[in-house]
Figure 1 (cartoon, each protein chain N blue to C red):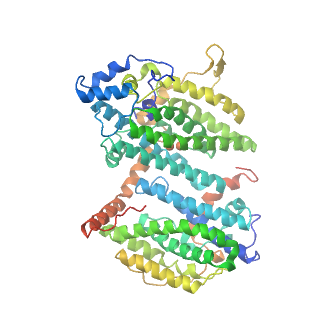
Figure 2: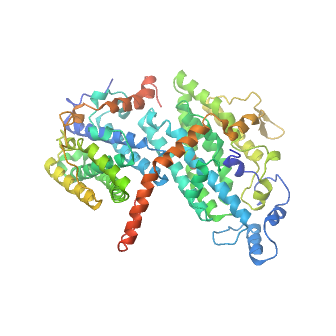
Figure 3: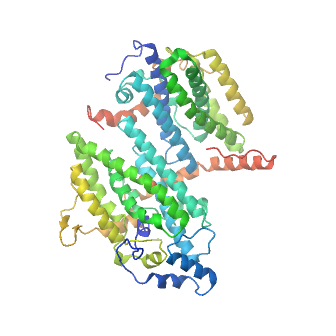
Length: 248
Length: 353
Ligand SMILES: [Fe+2]
Ligand SMILES: [Fe+2]
């Protein structure tokens, strides 16, 4: 566990970059797991493409904090600051699309605010570039939500299950992150409206039930994760950790 | 599987100035065996081939020419998508974020190559669904090289350097293939393959000049991938089945053995720079030939792998089939959604994704 700076003492912009960088890194990894067995070849391309965009964002953000590889490969699970939503396993394609819809709408709104706000100057240029990529991710998730929601009975049921299953991880998205000049209440209102609008067009509705539980309210941002995340990190970090000091 | 794409992608030889002549008989004679000579469309087809012009989808073409192309392009497309598996095996374990990005981009390129090639096959009247069904049923083949496992991270480098390297040598001549859509797809594909080859070489170079453990990992990968890579060029010329016809039609332009020799001659100096040893004690420069001599290839292994008894045949095709079955409900949903849109007032097209 080495050179990773302690987020608690890092300066505020750094804490923000770490949280957003971890979100992008972890979701990129999950999406890369689809490669080679997506439902259609076009989706192998699309999901890899989104994963690549996110990996690029992660590398830029983590490099603001420290050495990107030390941060990715040498931190313990408890030092990661990503929201729990992005670490959730892929599940079926509908589950992945539900995760994509929830997260890409959030990320687009968040980067939009960061790009517009002068106060968060260190992240504004990155956000301005990333928001264009994320608009494509959101469009991709939206188109698939429509197809699955308004496709067949089976796809509707699977999409419903994906949306419901991930709902309790969405509350955490709107917990303020230190160092990010964001109007979180406005972000949450816009998110509910956008996601609700897409779901309505997809003959679906917003899930009911709590958007956070005792365990998921702000937990990922504080370094408390879910069991599958530890396994994901074990796989991701194994080779790097097996050769201390080696260059790749 | 009966052949590698490469086998189809290679033997041929005589024509067009550049390549040396290997030869299996007069091209024109072979072509005529398949067409009915004398009538106008046949004559136009023959004239185009003779003039090195491209055959386009709407042009008349002999049935056997069409069938040969569909089979070859399908095998090539299948190889691109099956080939994603051994490399995706290391995506989640890539040891640096830079390497992870490079590998992810590469595997994405291979999916894109699959798309171009299935589209090229479609211009001949055979859709992707039909071709995938044949792949899944074991009635069409993919390159045997992907039936070998990627056991360490260095295998990712060995695939880039050797497998993509061999593919380039096989495929560059296909950029001049007589069938227009295939030739044009190959131009795009070859550009990307050469990136892959350089990235693989650079990965191996880093390992070979890294820690002793990394060097050993790189050497082990070369030891395992060298011979299978040589087999990518297909059986020796005197055992090739479809040679003459494909040469006559200018689908193929060089013989298997000729391309294999070219590959060896390119790799030897590169291996020296890498500081890695090619696992062939008989490999040495032959002053008289101006080429390298190399050891005998174990064709019994090649045939075993083709027959389905390679280390990963079942795993590769099993995963492919599983992905296809798992995705059926998604494809059904997309089709149902599109049908609903088409029914309800001509809505905006769905194209996304
Ligand atoms: Fe390729
Ligand atoms: Fe390639």
